[in-house]
Image (cartoon, rainbow, N blue to C red; front, top):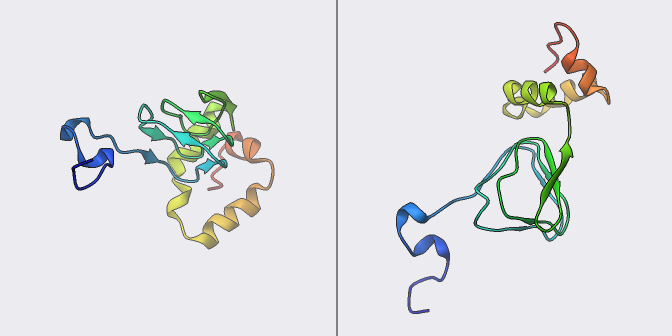
Length: 119
């Protein structure tokens, strides 16, 4: 209480300071609590409302509960890998919107299909 701030970032050994990395297009539900054991929430992850996150959440995982656990992944592993490799979030909004229109609701088949270069 006698220090400039009580925030953990400003006290202790510098090597013990851990910052949280939140990937692109992450959805955190209402009242999610992220504890110091979590260092990264991967791109495209969804964390359900009221969840207590105690460890890292991989890309495109859907995690819920207390403690948060992976319920499932949003897409098959191959689709997740293609989405990450495409880095679609670095493109302008019009390009992202055009890709969304082309993919429609069938993103899995579009990305797994032979020679599909849709993003």
